Length: 198
Image (tube, rainbow, N blue to C red; front, top):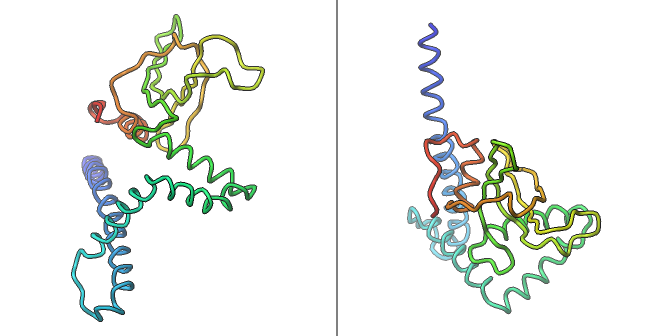
């Protein structure tokens, strides 16, 4: 009975990531297909081309990315963002999510994306983190002075973590991408190997 119990949970753990991925993909495809049919039915009637919703979804995302890259569209977006950046509670949530998303934007002008190992002197403990701020000179009074950096330490199994301010000498850059570290940290580094830089 114990052996059967172990087989069941091994099978469940093997099937769960695949099943969840397929289910989320199914939901996305269904949503895009429904949206495409709602948009195209007045023009083409009941004619349905499978996969057309996915094509439209990808096209809209690419078009949005192109528009956001234009200076005029960025100014327009800042006007659209006004309600989200001025309402008391919404402002905190929106600003935090936007800053978090901006951190992972490739070639971001205002963020240095650097993965590091944090080692305290005379300790064998190693923590993988992300340098989020190289210059602490503009922080308010009360922080320690010296050549220090801000390091974000992601937590496993959840979206969250801690930001610590440490001497620059405590951190050592490693050859991993930010995305790879976030993926590995999400599941407590239970994969076989750390993913190389993308």
